[in-house]
Length: 90
Image (tube, rainbow, N blue to C red):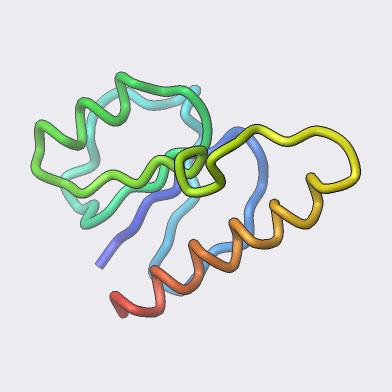
């Protein structure tokens, strides 16, 4: 199982997850079993959806872009959700 997390920022990953910078995306990785995308990268989402790979938009999980003192709390919650999903699949 390979879950790929596309993010411009470093993130904690669960076992079986791989971090990729979306800047270097060229094509869907054939080894991917699930993809998480942090940010607005519709080309990446479309490529994996066309390949039949489930795509999770992390902004949709958080449901809002947050500024100010609540940002660190949401960031930690997002990391926990990613880890929980990865552990459930493993």
